[in-house]
Image 1: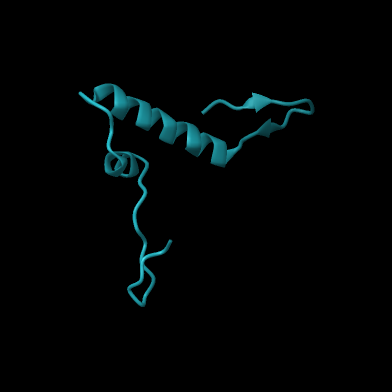
Image 2: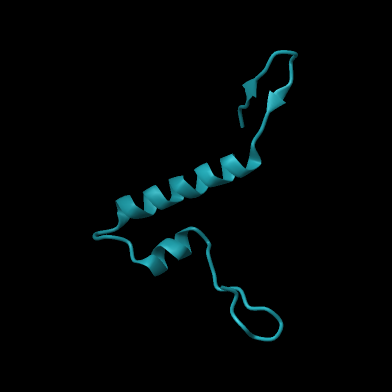
Amino acid sequence: MNVAPMRGGTAVQDHVALAEIELCGELIIAASAAAERLSFDRIDEVLRVSDHQDPTGHADD
């Protein structure tokens, strides 16, 4: 991975931004491969979103 050099020879890495860019790329690939609009469920699948449940069995909102 290449990072932008800054003065003083240090490099900047924004791991959150890189992760978001990767997910956007995956979403674009999925959308371009689909014959029609992606459903919300398919978007959640591509973005690796799931309904997490706490130990009591209640879904997080």
